[in-house]
Length: 398
Image (cartoon, rainbow, N blue to C red):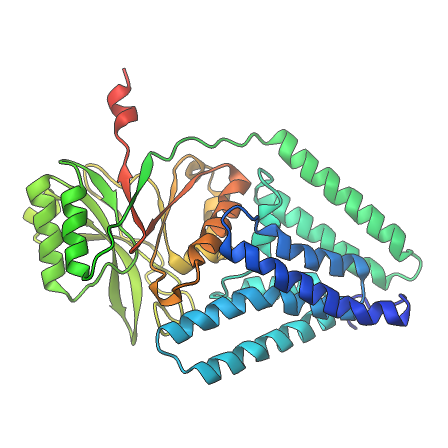
């Protein structure tokens, strides 16, 4: 049995559901990708419209249109790292078709759950839903999704008119969101980091020198993802020397070998680890990355990050690039009340996606998830900007 099979709308109306919702989602992805102030929830509105309309055509058009923006961005990135354009674009088109067919068969909520369960898929519809529910928390997010599922399932019940079911579900959604936002106060304090634009240079090494020279004596900074490869001993020596000479504490994104691919990690450089231990210490390793590029097709091990055992441990929750798009990565943080006060720090490197401003999507996706619990997120982006620890608060404290 398929979800929402009671297509009772006039024939002409049902026929236009698919193209209208497809075009709406497709067109709204453009400002979401290119403009930082356009909210992420707008393309997801097409999925809500498909649930309310209740026709298979609506579900197919909305799902394919919703997938269009993320799939195009992913395809562009794969081509940017050297994949052949023709098979990538053919695969992208196939994904749109399969996504539409799946939504038509299992319903929008089934479509949402299926995409969320793909461990490396960066565009779960839970992200736009979370963007529309600031302060609702994890249970508010799940509750609203459950109400949408009930709305779709209600169409199976012949004795419940579709209009009444739609109204009841929408009233329930409004009540739940209102309750969540009323009972939960959203606390957003300063994360204690400021973003410094990286200098534009001809060579990578010159850029490192300029960053090193720009850092104040005794500073703490976070640089972006894949600043250098773990096997590059000259790079390790450069940053250790910088840490010793200027008494710096640095957290750098490093590309480590993992099985037959690579994965992101964060290494700590400071005078103690570079002098006493002779090498920097990894304090975090990504558990998910782009398959065959920065990760595998499933969760990577070790799942537990190496502990930061230094005298001044890193104050924050680290994520690397793709992880910021994945609700299942956020899940333990949303459940852990102790993590709500610590800022989330996301390291990324978007050079393969140039000139698409993929960072807008990452900022919005991460912002949607931390918005559920009132936390704060900051970003260190290779070639765009690094994070500098703000010591003014500590210095001004009594």
